[in-house]
Image 1 (cartoon, rainbow, N blue to C red):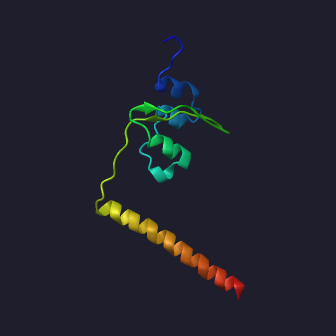
Image 2 (cartoon, rainbow, N blue to C red):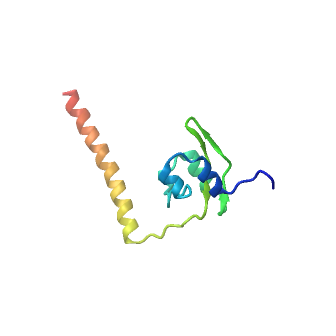
Image 3 (cartoon, rainbow, N blue to C red):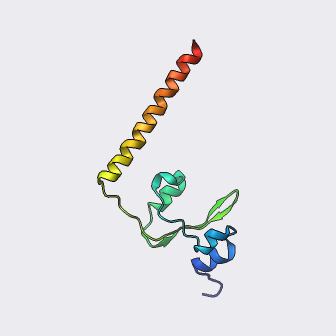
Length: 105
């Protein structure tokens, strides 16, 4: 159709970040937790390859092309990563409680 542009053409013309423009807008593999909840919901509801409708933000407009959704495989590395993240959150919570107790004394 007249006036349509490819994803590459849009990224090449409109992305201001030089390195990201050089990469054709490719951000690499993104984890669900790395995305804002509203973007994550839209991304993981797609049937790749699919271009999401534009997302208007204060800084501009985001176009997201979902090439594929990689289903994680629970191996030892992922198990350790999950364990580390959960332990880190638990530890941060406990340190916060200790700091509150110390401040109240």
